Amino acid sequence: DTIKVGDFAERIKKPASEIIKKLILSGVMASINHEITFEVAEKIAEQYGILLEKEEKKDKKEVLINDFEDKEEDLKPRPPVVTVMGHVDHGKTSLLDCIRHSRVTESEAGGITQHIGAYTVDIDDNKIVFLDTPGHEAFTAMRSRGAQATDIAVLVVAADDGVMPQTIEAINHAKAAKVPIIVAINKIDKNGANPDRVKQELTEYGLIPEDWGGDTICVPVSAKTKEGIDNLLEMILLVAEMQELKANPDRPAKGIIIEAKLDKGRGPVATVLVQKGTLHIGDAIVAGTAYGKVRAMIDDKGRKVKSASPSIPVEVLGLSEVPNAGDILYCVEDDKKARQIAEINQEKQRVEYFESTSKVSLEDLYSQIREGKVKELNIIVKADVQGSVEALKQSLEKISNEEIRVRVIHGGVGAITETDVSLASASNAIIIGFNVRPDSMARQAAEREKVDIKTYRIIYEAIDDVTAAMKGMLEPEY
Ligand code: GDP
Image (cartoon, rainbow, N blue to C red; front, side):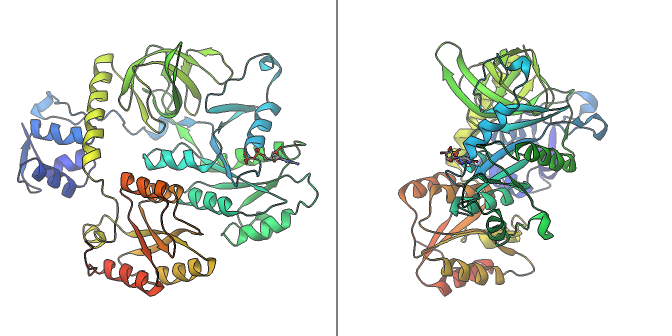
């Protein structure tokens, strides 16, 4: 009853080097060809939150991970999930409200709309799902937990104000997540609205409007007069169609928790966005350390529903505790298994808390390049003036070599904030501050998320450090 370390690594899709490290930490000296027992493998798998099962067949055990890949022929089209991002006061909330209300059909008009964190609108035979917590904080928080809920980002830019710092942040967050961006140029009803100026400014950030020969769709809208809203929805459907979004509805459900709370009367309530399969009443479920049976489901119109298919958000009742936004929900065979996995997740959280996850840092960069773990060094640059941001960005990107590409994924003026840290965490980036420091929230977040922050007062010192780190010649810091 043994398995080679290398085979085991392949089965659970984790790097062998990491497993060997974990084995050594638990007192088993092992190499890649070393045979380990099922019991030892089980302990290691637990640290990844993977449940191992022995398969009696042919004396060989099989690793069972309940998140299997679907066959191409089982996939069916699913609605797109959209997040609205942009600078404060540019009209994200107004736009979300306007879309929601402009699309209420006769039969629903009497119904109570429920704020469950996401809602669905019908456009003829198609659906679009909007996550209704505007802004990119939620978006990035989920991504740093390894979950991606969004297919399309709608970037709201006020036509009378133009591209602002949070607009740039939103662009970079969407780009880092490789999510297509549709620009909604809002407030076109206002005096002083200048959509062309907005388009001009967007080109500076790599978003070239379609009518200027690029591939960024820009839709002029007004959340106040509703002008252009139908056009925006059409464009979303168009982009969704090009993405060919699909999922298998006929399998045990997998979803993502987008919001959760403790309700006085109903107990833990979690909004789940189903990503694969269909969730049914009575299903045994687990999300992080919470587990239970689906007791009831309520949709965004306040109706009780019996099932939820891919992309459809529903409130789920019946979990043992309140899960975290970003936790992945799985439907499993029975309550016993749900509970078992929740316990493993609890152990995993404990382990993760003590063990640093393998985030990049300048100190470890060289060994991570050697192990093939890092091919791109993502950097976030913050500085006191725009000129320094640009200078650093250009010099840093120039030191890319054939082994590693240096990429500045975000640059901005001002102190290093918690948002910078969460973007860094989600994108496995380091942060370089020039004449600026992290604020206290950012410092705490960096410690928690193990994000490397380096601050400098001289540009060439920053360049030297990164160059040295790439060659494994950085002096360790004490
Ligand atoms: P958010 O911070 O991005 O969510 O922005 P809000 O939706 O709260 O909007 C900020 C302000 O702009 C509010 O006073 C809205 O009434 C106003 N506003 C939003 N959209 C429009 C629009 O299309 N036209 C006009 N004139 N005002 C708008």
